[in-house]
Length: 191
Image 1 (tube, rainbow, N blue to C red):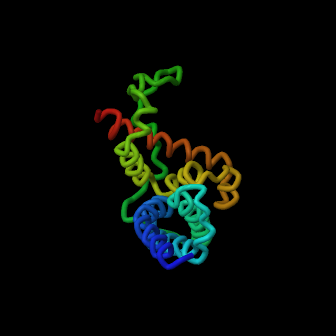
Image 2 (tube, rainbow, N blue to C red):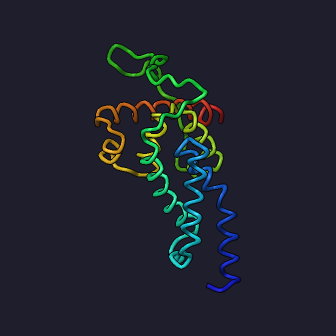
Image 3 (cartoon, helix red, strand yellow):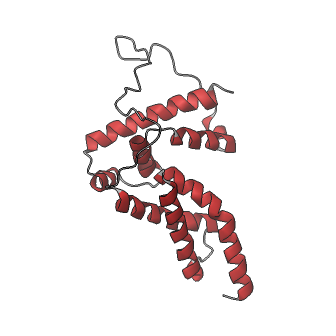
């Protein structure tokens, strides 16, 4: 790689660093771990710049590397306890405030979400989704992100974290309910 291409490549990496940090923070919920994962990603990219063959965008390639670094970090830190300043009440029933009829159906019909396809294209929607995801209790947020964003299988997550499949499904269900509630309050109802 010539000096000009090398400098241009390095500049592109620097420009994408803040995006990678946001992604890693959202996944790991720890600034130091996120910084380490992003640094390792950028070092890996700098060590083998020719590995980027241009078949995808640079950002996509870097996120692919970062996903592996995040999984490695989760494995490394899985036994560490992270104390959150906010008290997460993981035992609270997210359905407590909802009213059901005797037959188990919602007493009120959920809010109309409009045209989800159109909303998916909105940057504002993703900003709200990211904020709602960050507000999830730590355990639920971690499991949800491992499953939906890192695309790990349920079996992999259960094995990695020593969970039963039932517990995983319950936690994922609770996370999805909280995300739905947050999106209804902050996105769909706000329009």
